[in-house]
Image (cartoon, rainbow, N blue to C red; front, top):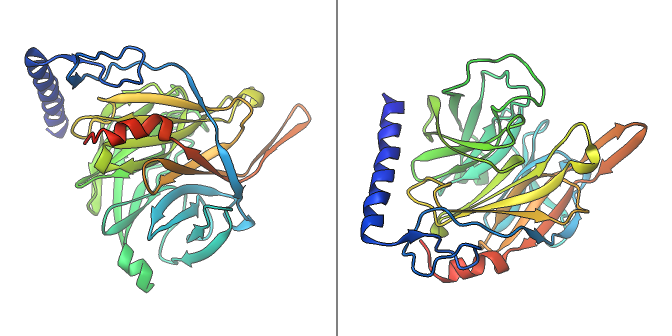
Length: 340
């Protein structure tokens, strides 16, 4: 019944768009796109962009406590990160030099494979959702009140879920489309952005943000041509920025090339219905990007975890770092236009 209702909702959105287009002009409304239509009054999600390369500045090296950084978020006027395994501690980092300024440990948080932390006004959501082999049946998001963290009283609520279309749980390392390292929290839902090792796409699944056991329902898929590992959500501007990297286990020299994807001017929580623009780091940058956050929707910070491997007798070692991106060139025109 739930799936049927989602189908009806999606169909209603299409019908509504067709009806709007009958009265207005649908097309690409982004002046930065190659196919911008100055006469269009309704964005139909068809914008196409020239390939763009962005310059990332290194703020500094992350210290030994957070070599496994898996997420980054902005809270209480500071940037915080979290390791994907081991001690369940939040680490406040100085965005100017990547130094660790504070840590807050929470013994009641189970940290099996926590790959993302998102938030709303009241809670932090710890996503124990890493599933590199595709075999997990214990996926969960742990919810903790922000005021409880500040008062060091940690009552944990659990949101358990499974993917509605996963039927095969055979372990296949880095060969599943049911891994996930990114999600955002809206007014009433959690939206997962999958890390698809096989197809190199990302699919959005939705589930309620209330404690209990839920089915994550499939909504949309977009070909990002890489592995998505983090998400920053700026609801006041209808903006989501995903981060990730290219990965080819057969050729490390062409792997670990970071990129971001801008999703903006979308409709009603359908994040792929609006503008979709991939921006690549310079070809010389190699990093296992894991988390992304912003305080203003223009300056973005990203963490990458320490990665090392040996291929054909050669050791490749990429350090854990904090990067800064200035995205004013790409986002300021949209934000200044007051798009909501």
